[in-house]
Image (cartoon, rainbow, N blue to C red; front, side, top):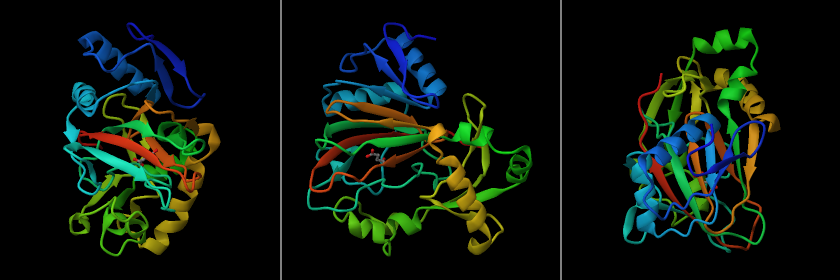
Length: 280
Ligand code: SIN
């Protein structure tokens, strides 16, 4: 379904679409917002180009899409606590989000998604990969689907954002509040998307620690199998950023991975995260 006043260009056979002909710096009418939301549900991640937005306009668009979640760990943009900075400086070697993950799965009610706006990008490199967890689910055998239907998994923020995390040391100054990294949540391994009702494989390498009631050692082989399966290129799209590019992704139905292949260059993104609804 094409949106009112914009055209839709799918970005791979798996997920993702670029919405062309929208200027997000102007207030959008209700029908256009509804059309954008419909494309978001259909494609899992939507992209916009050449959006010259002030932080206020970025926030304004986010508020039309949902309720803003203020991130506990990321440094905020000066004067804008609702906008998290995803920054890598030329002298840093570790980046934020450089592995497959879905944000906030450690929360009881995981975030709906994020609106990431590119402010400064490397000359080349720094793309983001997205993978469809509904396609990953669909491609599993009936037998494994049945086994996974009975399982729940534990997700945690502790090993990523807590005091002993090697990751936060690598991106020092960009991520803080380790004392707030005390979230653990148990979610079904197969969830239904709250809007589309499609089934989704809901574990991720970043935050899932083990299956509920299993040891970590028992869990790891099956988790590794699922991670390998779900990262097949057939389930993916790859987005190349330019200043003013925006990606809005669904944290329930997709994973993402920020490539760290631009050493010695700066990459600065502004991220607004949206509150989700209970998942089951
Ligand atoms: C993130 O994981 O939220 C950051 C993604 C990116 O910088 O491309």
